[in-house]
Image (cartoon, rainbow, N blue to C red; front, side, top):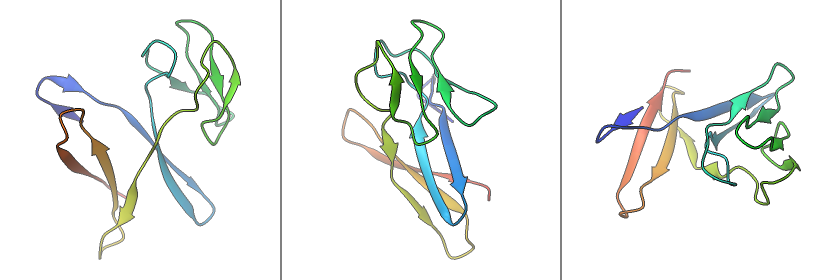
Length: 96
């Protein structure tokens, strides 16, 4: 997703009947987090790791990956709420 020249990446996760979205920005220093084959997340900048739910499993990060609000529209498409620091809200359609 790109807005105002800034790319924001998110993870949309489906586990059985549960759908949730996680930020891909590490809570330590703001580096990009990468998904691993086992469903966990790793930040290669400083080595923080997060479990499949986005909870910190290895520091230096002290906070879990932020969860983003999700909803399903009438066609069962996943909508993710992205909160902007300026207070603007945007919804991004993620094809399901």
